[in-house]
Length: 270
Length: 254
Image 1: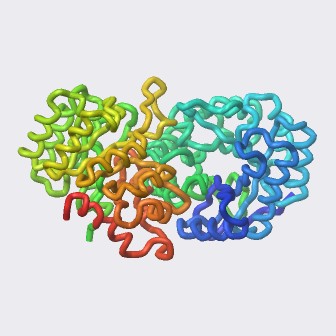
Image 2: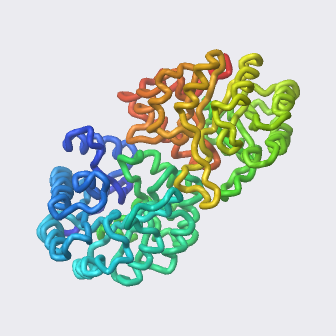
């Protein structure tokens, strides 16, 4: 397993980024990502993978596709270990042995530090359970996609209620539920009684009021800044937090402290 | 010194969102604190009231005589008295721009009434704001899903009324290329977002047609202010000045 990372001295931590613009070579995309992140005040970011390398639709990549995504992430982490924290992408519909072997390769023997789930399998599926049991053993966090899409969720796509179901089955695993802007008020209420779930602030446009609502319902220790770059813009998504009516200590937790705690960074007592 | 002209803010209640600073007085204090010198304001209530004037009139009375606000009444051109109301707004309140919410009023941009309204706007030298959407479609109320106005339809309408200046409100980034040739359509950037927003928007519509708009109070203000902090390598200072205020003034003929 990896040694503990030191927290950056200053700057925000973004828990939800990707490297999948697709129109740039990876080196150039990393440089662009870091230039824009720095300009927005982001010092460290969780890289969740170029999911398009798995399948164009993010649907159900096979083990080979999963490995392509994770190799891409590993390359980013090795190139910029002080800026990227990599999470291991999995499709639980693949044989469980393949997922557990990938965790071994990427996390136990490799540099990745958490798991990422998108829309391959709904969070209520028992297919998630052996993977979460291994995550518990390793003491690693998980970032899980969720949306209430009024135009219709995709097949297998999880809602916040589905993530809450998963969280209750695995109360010792810390889950960052992605997309406050997609889960919205209903989603916040769904996870309210799941203390092992935080919500990241990404998703949709920075609609006023959502961050304050989440902080009021969940407490500031369960809301964490995420941008979903390059689907979104770092600075605009940071503006979602800076524009929210929060106390300074609450803002610090959302922009930095909570992510540092979830990642177990050294030198942080959030 | 405040130099921003914000071309899209709202007052009043919007039933799908609990937002703060809904009244002009508190909105003004807030916006001035963010560097705004003028705000183009519409009534959110007017979008859904059976007669938009029921929302417009209280707003017009509230901001009348306050040069900080430029009132932009909502019109439903499917109503028989829209012309009378519009003329009254111009005569009494010196209104310089109107806003249509075509998909909330079931008046597609190829509707004859819209065409008549644009002819009226040309005659009176009025700007025409088209609200493409009020909220992102994925976040609508499940029983009230309103599709967005298509920018391609706006480009076509604008080509039929070349002397009218149009403002597209709440466009998405991905749709901007549809306006590339529509030289009399301006775009505010409240819902334009990309990895580097201004550069992408400028690549699509050029430096003379992009304007600062916040869609406030529905969007966090800092989120839209942040778009202005583009790297000078990507956005030249003169383009930024045009976005901050110059282009908005041009919409009104300055």
